[in-house]
Amino acid sequence: MDPHLLRTFVAVAETGSFSAAAERLNFTQSAVSQQIAALEADLGTPLLTRRPVAPTEAGQRLQRHAKILLVRLEAARADVTRTSAPPGRLALGLTPLAWSAPVAAALTRIRAESARLSTRLLVAGLDRIVTATATGALDLGLVDGFTAPSDPLRLPEPGDPRSLRVTECPAVVAVPLGHPLARRTSVDLADLADAYWIDAPGVAPFQRLPVDGLRAGLHYDGAEATVLTGLVAAGHGLALLPEWLLTGRTDLAAVPLGSPRLVHRVELLRAPATDDPAEPASRLTALLTP
Amino acid sequence: MDPHLLRTFVAVAETGSFSAAAERLNFTQSAVSQQIAALEADLGTPLLTRRPVAPTEAGQRLQRHAKILLVRLEAARADVTRTSAPPGRLALGLTPLAWSAPVAAALTRIRAESARLSTRLLVAGLDRIVTATATGALDLGLVDGFTAPSDPLRLPEPGDPRSLRVTECPAVVAVPLGHPLARRTSVDLADLADAYWIDAPGVAPFQRLPVDGLRAGLHYDGAEATVLTGLVAAGHGLALLPEWLLTGRTDLAAVPLGSPRLVHRVELLRAPATDDPAEPASRLTALLTP
DNA sequence: CAGGATGCATTAGCTTTCCTGATGTGGACC
DNA sequence: GGTCCACATCAGGAAAGCTAATGCATCCTG
Image (cartoon, rainbow over all chains, first blue to last red; front, side, top):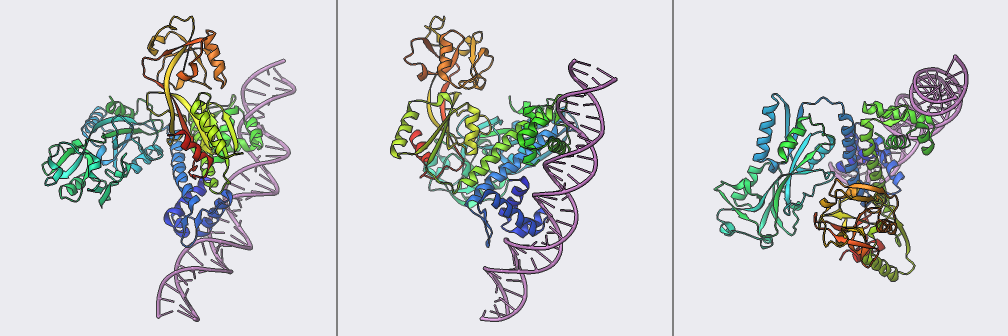
């Protein structure tokens, strides 16, 4: 179970091809074949079907574990290496809806405090932010999601539990203006089982909601919130969104959620070992978590 | 960052000696020396001081990561391998205070249902149960601890979040009979900051409490609850314990906890991939979590 | 249905890695 | 200052791992 073998296995499982994996990893196809054979021999189980190449039951399990393990290995390396890294830079990642006024204010403040602080900002989907923060590629990650009030977010692996609450605000259902619900003062998700939702994995994935049985009428691949609200306004479906995103908008209505009680919550993830108070990341952490 | 190297590094860090680690791993001292050198070269940082041999700052970080990674690696192997294991055995682990009437009942029931079910029981400290369950050495682990009502336990790595609530009962402070608090109907932990506690890492470690500032007067190494209650009764110090453990006892008093609101909670950990309903582990899970 | 193309498996041979056993070296203790 | 102890280093050989060439299915095409 050498990481080398795991990396190769993941590559094969993802590409669905030995040769493609070989190319991706700069090996020959022969080497990949031998590595997979070695792994299967070691574990005593076939991991991939050939022709077509696809993970078996056992292979799927291994794939899940391997992806996490490889990320954690990277994270460990980053943590150990970081010790003597030169401070003074700040790499911050956010999911689209994690951006809000307090974040903006904190960022303004820290950049004013330490002029010409080298800053990098990455806006991407939840998975990407979580792994990039875990590996230390980002110093800080701001992620969002919906949960019961004051419950922590359930993050994908390898999201670690050191996350800090940044903001919480009510969850609302965004509906187009003409919609029958538009004038309601409250709505229950259960009443919306028949409605069509917009599934936007990169923005507000409702698979992660602590509710199920909702149907998606439209899938939106992207990490951009304005497009999503635009889609709702145009009547393509409903979306569960944080209240602040819709305040002041006149082209769609926000209906407060009655039950289940859900809030939109933003949490801060820290890269392993960003504990040095001199680091800008620590300062920003302090600004964001009062 | 080969697991081989990590394993060696952990061995050296734990034994504090290259030669001892070599012996433990069935290598020569030379090999160990080279492996550590390779690891340090790879990470670009000294990990151990020599003479005496002790982990550096970076080494301590690596040690933490490595221990977790190695366990998770084992867990992955167990998960993948298990697929075709013959069912019919049940290996259950518990921390001492996780044992209670419902557990006893469930165990009786399952052994009655499937006669001559090969059963193994391990009672040990929290860490041991958690890692043994994660690696698949145990099918199920019952662990206990104190938290705010209905909050999950904060388990040590690599405790995974798939744990299930089994029981919850009030937390009480155990005091000897003559103690000034013995007749109180409620007490706050804050009022006990000056009291002496018994620290029993194997039974009810108060480092894990969501409170701090408590002082230990006596350390008790062992995984046996009766000895602990005996120590309290003999006036060696106080202990935070589940209420059920003390009901009916006349040699010491149980004072309910006013604040913080804490409960004693028992959770069930499942080995990776114990999902086959035919497994006795699944049956026991069903019995324990109504 | 034949022939070619595609893609994984196998083999041979070479390079690299890694372990052993022997030897070197520096600090601690007497 | 000598001796011991423990880690470092070195040389040699075994094992592992990669490349390149080849083998053998399957699938596609005309």
